[in-house]
Length: 167
Image 1 (tube, rainbow, N blue to C red):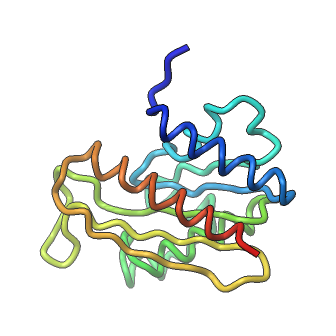
Image 2 (image 1 turned 45 degrees about the vertical axis):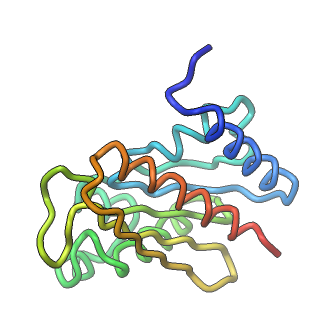
């Protein structure tokens, strides 16, 4: 069977699932600009249902509010692509699931939609684990192309998920 994902990315996903399985952790994803690609990668692996609790694709502002409980004031005040929204998405994914860890991604993949303040390639990440401080990352990938921004975002999300599993 062929996959939309590279062999090296699938191996990374398998390692992440094994790590979570070994620690008895479940995860959730809350994705905007990646459109569910992180959840898609993880669920490409047979048996992932014992680790992947659920995935939220919250592309619109309304979905972020309705599905994850992101306060409308956060989106109005800071924008959908902001550290505040990424953090709220991660917290919301934990609150609206039975997961122990949640990763959130919101950004501007392009080719349009950017501005001087928020250029194409800007992506904010949030990662929440129960009983731990929330982690935020921001990456400015640049206008490297929509597919490349989304692919790069998958790698950062996996990095965050690996880090969240550390004791």
